[in-house]
Amino acid sequence: MKSKIILFLLLLLALCVRANDGSYFFSGNQLVPIGNTNVRIDKEILTIRLADDDYAYVDVDYTFFNLQEAQTVKMGFEAVNEDTGDAGFFGMDDKHSGHPSVYDFTVEVNGKVQSYKNLMAYDLNDDKGQKQPKLDYVNFPASPDLEPYIERNGEKIPVGVDCDSVSGYRTKAYVYYFEAHFESGINKVHHTYRYRMAHGIFMSYIFRYWLTPAMRWAGGKIGDFTLRISTAGKPRHFCIDTYGCLNGKVFKVVNGVGKVRDAWGYDKSAIQCELVSDSVVETVIRDGVLEMNCKNFKPTDDLWLYSADALIGADKRLKYRELADYYERERSLVISLEKQSAREGNDEWEKKVMRSLPYANRGYVFEDKKLQEFFEAKWWYMPDSSYVPSTDGFTTYELELIKIGLEE
Image 1 (tube, rainbow, N blue to C red):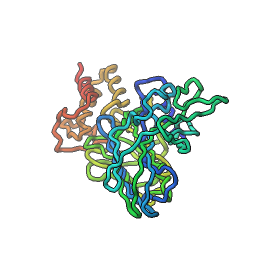
Image 2 (image 1 turned 30 degrees about the vertical axis):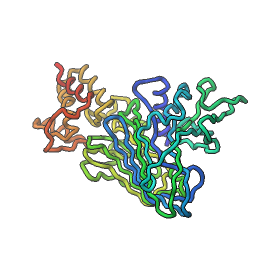
Image 3 (image 1 turned 90 degrees about the horizontal axis):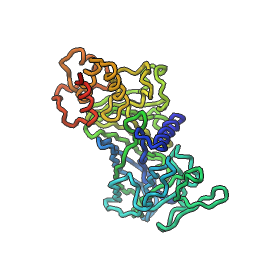
Image 4 (image 1 turned 120 degrees about the vertical axis):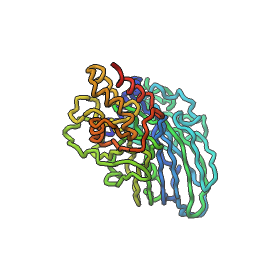
């Protein structure tokens, strides 16, 4: 958990100094009951697609069980303000138009599309964003005009103001609020949205998702929970922290090509990066899905997924780091270091590897024996003899790598 706080604080630091190398926008979340309920979650299938457009696409299928007679259930989706770590921007958005980083929000209950309202809720016990806030629905607005106050040094201050002048900030959440008709017994809910993923000083992308709010439903657990991570047919190399409730859970690649391993399978003493927990699953996927299934799942912790370049930290002198140990197609620290090294040292071998990386990432089998042996030694490399080399689908960053690799 200490490593999680360090990671988040670094993200907040990047925001506060307006750096271009770190941004936090939003964390995915569960649908939650507003108030007490006698409805439990019998089954949840959470599918997350990591797309090339920097968005995470979330699709959730719930099977709820209503322990009472047919009733109206007040439900909400809590979208914490994207500027949680940057006090100076509070109150500058249109508070009631929905979260600025959430798009295409939909909910269907028993096949019926639900309409919703955008309201606000506030955390009365803000812990500086280090974990998912506990929103106080006593102050849940009855109308868009209601603005709660906080007391600081004996002064009443509207929550929505720029709190930088009062030495602090408060977490607020855009709440997508609706009332759903639940029949007695089984009820099906389908929920979708997309949002911008964060990226950090050392990471190409960071995906965060609050699992713990599911415990607000009756029983405090999910009877049958399935987590699926899809890469939309694109190669991805990422890690998932498997601390707490995810510790010991089995992650496997299904319906495609990929690998999974304990990220600490190598010598820990060679790693100086403090940005990841002591329990990490490392995954490389191409045209596949990573899946975890658990019965009677009690989500006491939240989901942290991030690009594998996080494992090297910020120091290119780490003795574990070698050329192309990790590969991500955009904003990769590893690639940046290799570009700098190749330009400064004019190393022809590094240049050759660099211009070959995008093709190796897609499974190209090289005729050059030395180059092929080099990539076969990389854990993330998955050869595909059917792949015909082409720049179709290459990112701007990858095209730049090829260009640098061909420089005289």
